[in-house]
Length: 212
Image (cartoon, rainbow, N blue to C red; front, top):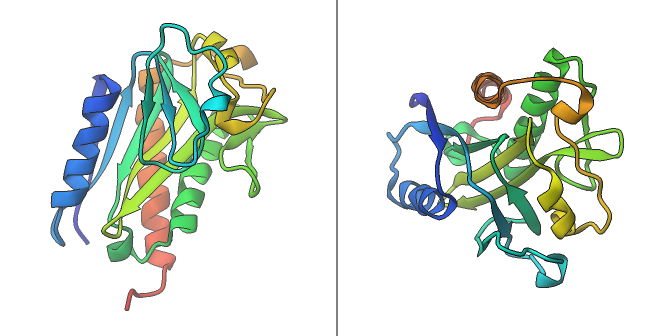
């Protein structure tokens, strides 16, 4: 199995990062390592392939970028951990649903380390604390490999979420770790979340049936 590289990119603009994910996915071969990019973005709304502009209520001065992931509209901004797993699913014997489960499991495990009880919902991808959404997911699979990924709200300005219907759900309440009384450094939380994600993906890989 090729290596799994974790790369911490700091705060980077959304569109060049997205284009870099696309290029890597297009150019990778059987020996290319799986990568896990850990980062933050400046304020941006992203609109998925199924996204309806009616869910953009009042974006104001925050740019809107239509992208090629699944899902509706979400917000990225400082204080939010973003992780993009560039994973050869075919090589690991992982289906898309199992990869989504890996993302959710890693987030739930991280939050448990901060004494936050969270759970995934089969009918609405993401991770929730009670009825409030704390993490969003959105993947694209091309040539048997994943890109895009997850965002976890750590310590951020939540106001921009009021300018959209988050993930296409009017009135969905969004929360971050700080609002739950947990002071965590986004960079530190991101590093740990990446460790847990790599661990979870590799565990599921070992359990996956051999690819045909």
